[in-house]
Length: 557
Ligand code: CA
Image 1 (spheres, rainbow, N blue to C red):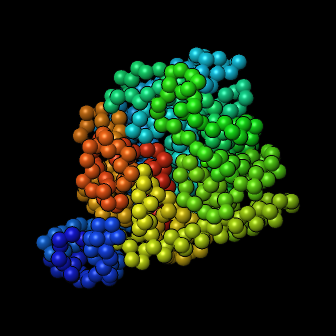
Image 2: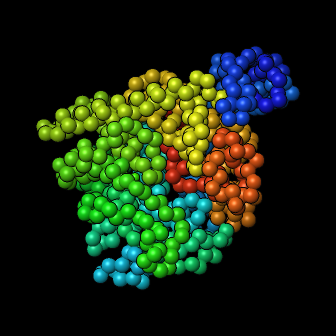
Image 3: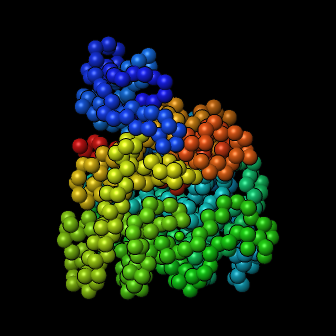
């Protein structure tokens, strides 16, 4: 726990709730000073209190409560995954699942137009296609291939690790699978059947107002096919194949001989080939607007490098698409392998490929060689796995060095550049890296630091906010979300991770004034703040993956 501000308490007391008899008297283990605000922060450690129950912390005149329970994170894990159900487009949401946030469906997307930038001989400009289902991307109502494929890939990777370890129940497995499948059914419609390329996004020309989905009337288009969308699509088809094998196979290991796994992966093989033939087909929204009408001014999800997308797609296709073009995939893996590990994001997906290889490593360590027959590529595979393990471990060990001296006892959040648009998801992403490291080494320090990063976003931070809607004693009430803004319900949809502190303040015109410019306090719980208070599927994917994993390990310890 971190205590800051004017509270002079040097000793805190931990009592059972409804008791004044302290079970622990606690002094600061250290005092840290914020490099930005100069605020002094006292760090207390009461981890020796382990008996389940409700407790009160008494610090001078202030009190706070906490719970010790084996299932403390379960409700959050469930709500975070349900966040995707709330983001579903094109269907009515059931009150049995969505509770009071049940609503009529909007955006059936059965009348979607081919934009001039996406026109081909087979599908000229203005052709109508049907492209229903999928998740709304964020606070807006559009559907972007790059971001939703990334979100699926991240969750699918963690889902399979939990399945492999038999930590996930059949019921949870089904919930995961159904949610991923809902978006995948949409993604499959984004492939141009004539050449295999994938449209970059399905969008209105400009953002809708803050109105209910059923009130939206703007025309919806699919735009230019892009190399990044095509590769992410190719990757996610393979990810879905492997995840399908894990879910329906009921095995620890997806069965490489299962036809269904290859078939799903093969859905993406054409997109892969298209991307290899069109390596420069990046999505440049401004350039496109100079050539075609109507202009499109919604989220661009542009990218300057597709090497990371190629690494991920080649890796997952190599793993799942047997007997696909394995020599091509393996060559592309080797040529596009990153030199060092970098934290994942929608624009840099190399980490997802690294996680795939680490998953292979886990299988090898447990069951020995993967193929029952002689595998001519075994040596190359082994070298790639070894390099991936090494780069992840180097990243984690370096990251953990920052904990010492940190104000909130976390590895992430100690450098100004740690606070950026959507930084709360980076706390989760780094926690996921630590969890892979924990699986590989069984070294408790990685698990502890995963929990610490999560503590940060759940409230042990400079603003005291729990950055997940509906959880904690102080949490966002006004996220930048059209769904939340238009439903007439005071409380926001629960289980959504907001972007978090962002000194970039790109929305200063709309927000008018931030109460702080310090990197870790630059957060405003107001609806116009898309730079600090929006919600997004990629950020929630990070939350789902980290919290689900931790909730299961917590139960296992
Ligand atoms: Ca990229």
